[in-house]
Each structure stands twice: as C-alpha cells, then as structure tokens.
Length: 548
Image (spheres, rainbow, N blue to C red):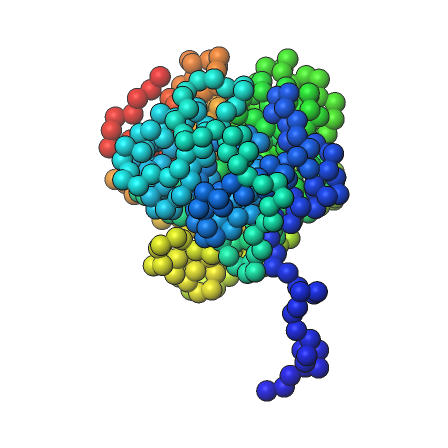
C-alpha cells in the first residue's frame, strides 16, 4: 500500500477540523450582526443577538429538564419565531428536533410522539384539541410547553408551562453542545403516510449544513435576505431555510396562516424578497384580486416544488413580476436537492417557452453529489433523449441517514448505492430532468404510457380551472384511460361541459392522451396539501362520480 506524503503525519486536530453543523450559523449571525433583525411577528421584532440568547436559554432549560443528547423534542406549531428558535435550541443541547405536521389528526400525532419517543412537546394552543386527543391514546406523555402567541387567542393552554416562562429557567450563557460527529442526527421528519403510518426520516448535521448553503447558492440569495415563512417549517424543516436564513443573517417574517391577503400584505409591508411555496400556493396568489397584487415595486423571488408545477402557473407568477425558481426533492433529501438552474440565453425566449423550461425539475443542486434517471431494475441510466422514461435516483450528502426503526425499508431505499425516489422522469439532452409521474400514477393505455402530469399541465392552461388531477380509469378495450378531476376557479362559468374540456385537451395534445372522463368538484388532499390520487383512483373505478 502506497501512502502519499500528503497523508503522512497530517492529521485532523482542533486547529484544522470541526464537524459541520448549522448551529454555527446562528452563533456567527449573533456575533457579526447582533443588532440586525432576525425575526418579525406582527409588531414583535427580535435581533440576532436576542434570538441567539433565547435559543441558548431554551437549550439550557431543556437540558435541566432532563433532555439528553439523542433524545427527541417535538414541536407542533405554525411558522412562529418560537418554531424558528427550536431549530437551533434543540440541537444545541444535543437533542433531535421533530417538527410535526400541524394538519395531522390526533391519531397520527400520537403515533409520531410514541414512535419518536419524544421527551418534550412544544405546542401552540391552536392545536390544543389535537394534542389532547393524541394524549388520550398514549400511556407515556411528553412534558408540554405552551407557546403564548399574543396574536392568537383561540384554543386553550394545556401544557405544564408557557414557553417564555420556560426560557426564564435557562441560562443565556449556556455553552451549546459540541457536535463531535457531523453524522449525528439533528432532526426527525415524518413522511405524510397517505396509505399507512408515516416513516420517520432522520437528518444529520452535515446534510442540514450543506443543504442550507446549497439553498443560498442555488437561489442567489446574498446577504440579509428578507424571507417570508409561507412554507411550513414542519415540511423538511422548512426545506432547511431556518438554517439558510441564519447563515445569511437574514430576516424571518413569520406567518401563522397561508392566505393570499396575508402574503401580499407582508410582501409590501416588510419588503419581502424571498418565499417558498407549493404550486397550490402559487395558484392561490395568481387567482387573488388585482387590488391585493398592486403596489409591489421590488423584486420578489419565489421557490416552488411539490407536485410538478404546470407551466401555466409559473407563467402566471412571472406575469406578476415574480421570479420563479423551480426545485425538486423529497423528505428523504432534505427538501430541494435538484434545481432548474437558469441560463442567460433563455432570457430571449417567449414567456410560454420560458415557463415550459422552468417547469422542468432541472439538475443537481450545488451540494448534491449524484443525480440520474435510470431503469429501476437494472440501474442503467436512460438515454438523454427527453423521451425514455426512468426513475430518479440521488446520491450523496443531501440524502437522509435512513428511516427511524425501519432497517428493511431503509435498505430497500438505498439499494444499489443510490436513493430510489419512486418518481418517473425523462432526461433531456442538456442534462435536465423532467418528472412525468410517480411510478404508481403512470397511465398505460393500449400499451402506451401516458403521463398524468402532462395531461394536468394542459388542463391548467384552461382559464376556468383552479386545480386538476388525472388518474387511470379501468377500460375494457384500452386497459386504462385518463380520468380527470377538476376544481373550477371561484366565479368561473359552471356551464362548462365535460365535452368542452375534453375537446380543449385534444386541441393541445395527442388525442389518445386526452382524458376520456371529466369529474367536477373539490379534490381530496393530504395534510401537506398534496392531492390524494389514490382516493381519486378509487372514485374513478369504484364509486359513481359526483359532478357539481
């Protein structure tokens, strides 16, 4: 074995190596920019120095309460400053933060608290009834800390102590837990679990650190961004943006409820430059009254992901003057790990052409090591011809540690040395990937593969359609045919017919891809706002469609 001279007697030591952890971001923000605003919630404004002190006091109080390194601390709360603080305070005492989806029911919350073995639950009284229901299903209950938000009075306090009183028990001179190994867990996030119990996805300090930096690079954020919290912090830890905003010493503008008027007002009042949201949020903003949209005179940047955003939705946002960046990822990849990186030569294209380019998922983010579209069986990459379908695979530091207490599922997800996303895509000649469907959602009609996303994209171009979802419907002749479920925009002409929509689709795509059936009405969604296609498949094939 040959040893390089560069590796001889040149070892890691305290002077030249430290484990990567996003805890260092808030330490730096507080020391370099102590007086700059860190969080905004109504009239409450806190500086980075004040926020850092609150985090240290929370970490200290948690440790005094018996929270040890490796223990789970859960939080069930909206996008408040306290939720942001927990992203630093909990790992500061060596514990693992578990941010729970605020839209879950009591049974799901009870499962998560028990599966995570949470020692403490920080919660907001808006969700007190859910927590009380969860506790009725549990034998061992965590210690409860109530957030007392002065701007919210509904619900009851059910905890052992209020958040600010708990902080008073802590020490602002507390020395944060030293992270010796960046592979240690930092957070625990649960998948939505639409067809069973959710899986616990474990993040490590290294991945959280790197994706936070990756966010700022891929979005070109610069120093001191003003960021609006439209994206839930419970969702992949807000796509790691709590740590990103600390790294860039920016401003966190808190938002309890995602409503068009609240968003537009915050953008204008706080001069928000950045926010994230699923396509459903963008669609809501597109459909808002013109009066709300008026008066924005600065650059606003939007990052979107989730279900593949239809080009029409992106075009609508850009027509408002918002710059849209499309990203892609999963809970298992710390949120966004793929970005539709923009090229200057695309600026001269038409608005429709630019929207179409932006609707592609893109290329690997700066900190993702590997991305490919490959045959799910052979793991051989598919041709970059924009036509051959394969599964998306990721590899590297932006992939989870694994699923908590679920080694079999973890091993299956990492089979072949790559993370299996379950999403089907094509690979274009320029290296950009474009999702065509989830593997379970592809429609096979007469031997031809039909992408439900492609059909949905066409439906979204119709001026009356607010939401659309396409699923496979059993057909004696063709095997399967596309069945579209659509929700019309408020105030839209309800006289529109099934035939008119089918004809519209046939005008914009191959006839065999157009839906054979249209069902009007609201679409069922998961607690994270994703359309529940499995319920729509059941309705298309089992129950009589109901039209409005």
